[in-house]
Image (cartoon, rainbow, N blue to C red; front, side, top):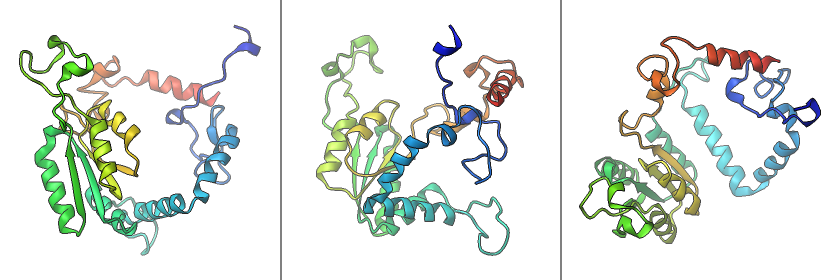
Length: 246
């Protein structure tokens, strides 16, 4: 392929080798695939959305919430000292936005956790509408699942119904929604059909106790199989970092 017909380098901020990044510092720099440097037109269009009063206020309160999650911000130099859990953040943010009715779309596998979450939110004065993933009790055969593709072969097995969850929360006119433990793909469908703003309390990860970051933290050791590299070897990642400097 000639240089003139070569495809442009795909942006990937995850491999940015620059220390003083232009997205963080006015006098910073960016690599050849830096979207801050090379996609100003797209970013300018995206900023127009913040002119909407609702979006602007939502973004403003989210930034305030972000800052309040660290301790000692006003007493001296910044230190990385987190002080609030995700649950506390959700409660405080919903309060800042003056939301009263909260929706919860949860997986049936975390019903107990959903009951705890619902109780805590109600104690903070919120009205809670919670909908399980199996709502409607629709057999998996209705979406073409074969008997051999079920979890419990030979038994009745209802499909997860994230679209139903979304539509029920839409009909309840919830102010803000929380996803709790929905499966990969089912969470995508929920987000596609829900009308209101949604945040995530936790995502599904059956192996790590719903802490999917654990697989990343152990990718160089116990979970080497995820990237097929030898233990302690990060040659591939380093090579991509070097490539980003060119």
